[in-house]
Length: 121
Image (cartoon, rainbow, N blue to C red):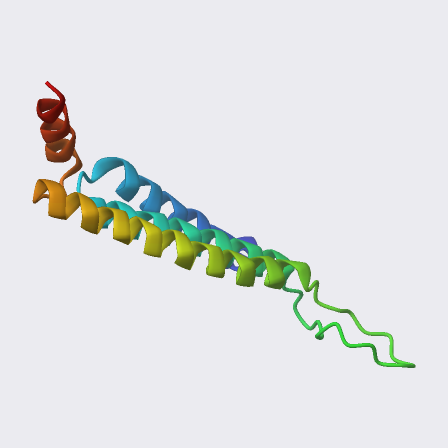
């Protein structure tokens, strides 16, 4: 039981990723697909942050004469970069969804594909 508690952030990130992935696969609504993608992003950020955390560790600031354990700053910087990229991707996807809605009057992907095929014929 203690092993599961020590891995609670990793388990939570796997559950969140699974929820986001199933949302991305099963829902035909484009907004729900975008939300599923954002849930998956959040799961990856949680996993990265959990992997870089050391219990009892300190920020990586040099302390002369002290022998301390430092937290790895790389996962934190990857999470910050990923958040910026995911915000940009979300904004782009929402703009594309808005354009599709204006053209086809629907956010249902099945309806959009059907209307797009009818328009080509």
